[in-house]
Length: 444
Image (cartoon, rainbow, N blue to C red; front, top):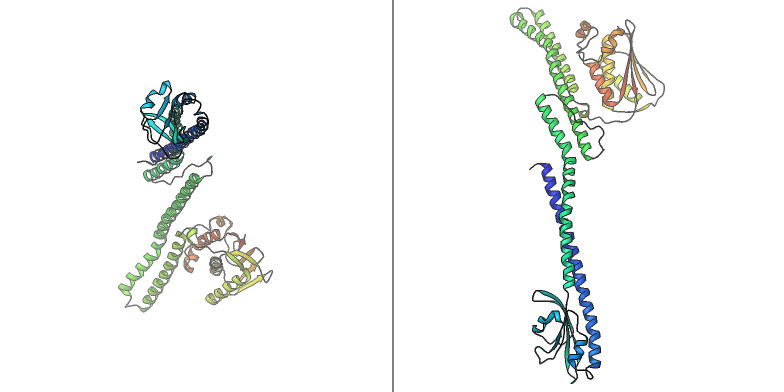
């Protein structure tokens, strides 16, 4: 069963059940109140008649006395303990009541009785009779008017239940459309994606900010992630196949050369091993970079905290100097300069630009630390102005021959851009060909 039909069915059944429960409760409460009221009135009336009968029974004959207090639609009766029927007087409309068997009650008695499918209120009250004995003054009174009112109430409540079902059905249909509409739209969008192979999103413009719209936003965000990851995978496969082809070809060529002449020429053997080793290292570094770039930023586990830029930069430079034996000058405007960032990603970012400065410059490298920035300067070959917009493209090299010689893969700046976006750092590059390059990292 579809969700829309389930919502219609369950909502309608629940509402009808609640409406029936409410109407039945109303009817039972009202019926009980009316019947209780009839009994109380009959008890009060009987008590008053009992007093009058006790006072006048010695002066007026019992039949005449009872006829004076006869209900309009009922019977009044005197029942002695040793008598069955007793003395009874009935109204013209209730002659059949005289056939009802009488019973003597030692105390007061009141109840609703049914006689010949008719409802009556019955009250028995003990009084002292002419001979000093205790007898029952019993009054039986029809409550057909009350029953007729209850019958009308039943009809009204049933009619209300039936009439109320119409707006219920309409409202449940509208409700099911409101709830199932976005779900149906999501299903159709997914089917379109499945059929066309293209990523599509739900249109949520002009809709209220409720849970259904939140579900649509989540769906669109999921599609964005899927598309991003799909594009990254495609790009990874394309980049990997393109860039790994060259080192693999070099390794294969040198391996074949070793098989043919490696044992005969030691110089060729050493050259081939060195080339294979160099290309293997470059392939490993390139693979690590590609795998990192293939991940989405949300999978990088960014942990931002307040850090001292002086300490982080100085620590990174010391490690860099030990690894490459290059002199780096540090200039800072203050001893304590703080920023909110991810420590490990910032170190990785610094290493990328320090390594680039090392590769493209033989002179000293300068690092300037300000309140909101870190600037890395080199006095190297520089970058042509026309090439600056392309430096963050993957596998793009300004000087392909030099980069290949230094083992570069063209992924460093691309990865730096990904890292900076993830930790909220803006990169600004200024470069003059033949003079050098300045890379500035601006913190939020």
